[in-house]
Image: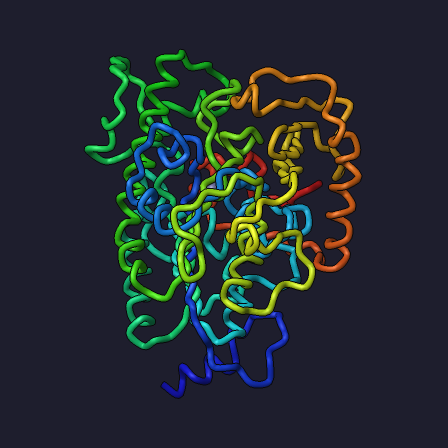
Length: 461
Ligand SMILES: [Zn+2]
């Protein structure tokens, strides 16, 4: 007990934020933030898609669903850094999945830890271990060490959920407010749902293609093009994984249901099954990849409501700080969605996304309620003279670029750059030292498609 008190008083030893002299007695509500890695909103029944997710639908009936929530980066590590900090990827470091972050500002976990909350993260995938991301800042517990499932390169979701639920049950019993972050990797490639989910959306496909890495790697690498029949079959396996994941998280949602806890469910990015970009997410910024689920339920959050305005993952942390009465971030790109939860729709907000600027052909995207713009991205600026834009009302699958650019996007490059520069000057520290990875780590990240051939070498921009 004394140890626990000292821990709360001193906070986490590697937490760079200044501590208040006296840690206040924490007040609830608690926060349960669930990230379902690689879940595309449009595939879920909750958003009109084919994958039935009854547990998420039940959560939606107890809370508010955001129709157009946008991820800012189509990879795990940097997308989660934006989720935890409220700043866009260019500010917190632009490091590949093999590095650390340059970000020196506050994180959500640090804010909650300083408030006196217990903080813990339960990690389901290699791409979000602390060694891969430096993500443990502010978490008193960062549960990311476990034997790997060699076939699926994940920690099975049932184990992640059980570990998180055990920890939270103790907090509920002690009446101790907490911040729990739970990361499920089950929907991520390869697409290998267990029965009955493996045939739940069967298309009648009679060929030999499976959702395993060995079968799909040539398509993911752009070396082969699948037939329409093969695409439908592989998408049916992905959709099976989404329904399976919905069942996996049911115990988490059930245990939280009658507690004083805000539950948020979202994803870091989706997955591509069109645009000649197959079964992957790193290299695209269309809606199928960047539009993610976002649900919130809990005290003071309206029940059964849906909000249609564009929001970004950077908005989640400021909103959670507001809903818990925790000091806000001073400088951040995110907005507190409190007014939107209460029914006020926002003006035509624009959400920005980029792909990894260290890879070949990086891209930039600006997305509002009506249009998406996609442009090549060079040295921190979109090349608007080579941009494509899509009318999302007439062409929601983004198949037919329209011309000319919508007027409001003509100066979007300058708007974006001003946003990045102001917060980079404030929060960007020196380049982190390149890490030396173990051969096992490199092997696993390569298998997931996250490490290029020069893995382990210092990144060059
Ligand atoms: Zn991911």
